[in-house]
Length: 119
Image 1 (tube, one colour):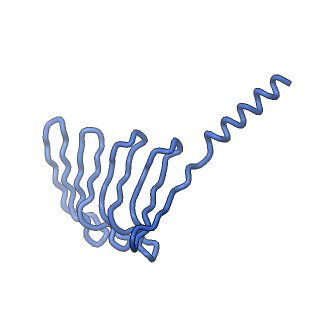
Image 2 (tube, one colour):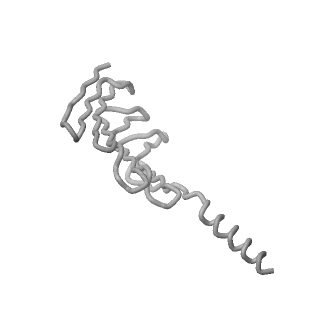
Image 3 (tube, helix red, strand yellow):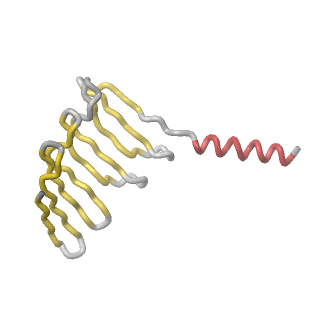
């Protein structure tokens, strides 16, 4: 009986831990703000959708510690303008044109080195 209670308690705790954290959506003016979460409840992504359900406006992505790892703009479902991506000691600025990468500039913190890439 004691083993049965232990097994049930273990299954119950695993079930609670494994439950998916569902995204939230809230209307803000003409847009819908969507927030997506990691399993532990911290925010993984946050941004907006237009009336047609397309990504629109500023979007941000975070790692599991809450550190921002990406930020940029969507216009009616396509990436537009400057996007920024952070990784360890590196910052990449990616310019989009017609949903395609136009050029990339990368800064590294160790040597303050700038690398440019044009498509």
